Length: 528
Image (tube, rainbow, N blue to C red; front, side):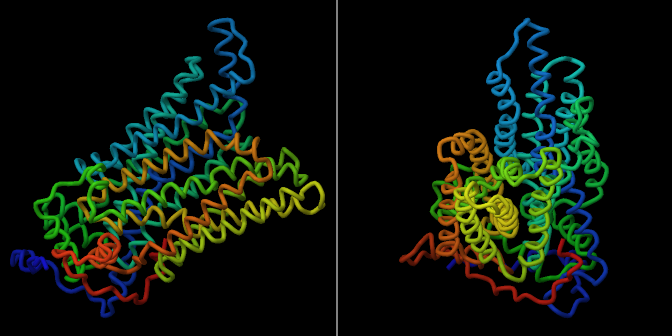
């Protein structure tokens, strides 16, 4: 069994004097009551210019579809005196929409090296360079009569989203105390869902979703980025990054003090120092090295499986399919844009509920329960589609299935999936793990965007059967393989996966698991 030095012994006497016990008598809360505002503000500042952009830039492309297609057609006619056919316009439009996913993939691949080189907070700030360039190109594309500028703009905003979707949960997970680690990381999903709702609202015809304003709609994502640039510099870097990656103990203690709103607990600093001792002499892992490392075999399999399932479950596709179902339900086409806002609101509400439950119920039950419910609603949806022309009220059941499917997704997979890489990988492997998870998410998003129309045309009312199969298999994997991580130290979680990675073997050299954290009274004001 490997022996690691006592972390507290590595502190100088001066540093020890600066870490008195926090004046909280119970272990369940790491904050002086009433001083938990700093973490909340940091999460809000980071997420407004982070994962909110992912949801926002997905949603704002629905409203200006016709206007941008007309702009593409007019541009071809003025340049080359060519009148495009409908399928050619659709092809260019598909390129504009889908290129966002490829930009996201590029962002996911560079997020790891950036977060190691610049740190978590500075990476989020530098990420706004891509966003501002994207907004400038989108804003001037109409005056320049160049649809190519829109395509480049979508690539850049995709890079921005790809970086933030990877670095932001890492930043939150490393900055929050372990009893709020899941809630803080899950706030990334809340702001993603809020971005979808915000994009749907801003895209209304009465606001920016009209023909004269579509270029302002595409450039409006610069406003959340500007808010982040003005507010995030006031908050500290990730304490774990400062100590483990930079070796700056004083900066780590100061960051913890600012984020906790009170003096630092020895037990929390002990855990970070223990992880530093385990990572001593190790450089950050590269993605391909994780594939070859048996110590993290099932961790890698888990993030690949669950990151892929997050897109292959069809939740994003159901947003596109909602228009057809609402139309079949007899809702006026003029009203559908308002009803569609309810779909984004459903996921936003479900993510908030999940945030309140994640530290009570745990990660495993929310993930598995979400996928089980999605399997059920996909089956009911298929039945409703089969009988929608035979039974008068079936279209309304189809509409209800849309909302329940999205609610089930938001209650578990939408948020918990992004938390896992922070909890099941060590500091040196975490950036590479997020690169793998982010790459799988963006690749599968691109694949789904390309094949969903063919699923609808070929399978008809059975188009959601493949999604039901994905959800069922995902629930099975979570139930049989994935260990619970709620309230556990990283050493204890590593020990759980050690049993999977070396099943039937007695591997020496693994550090003993630390005592597991017992959940106490959670400050509900910090459950974001």
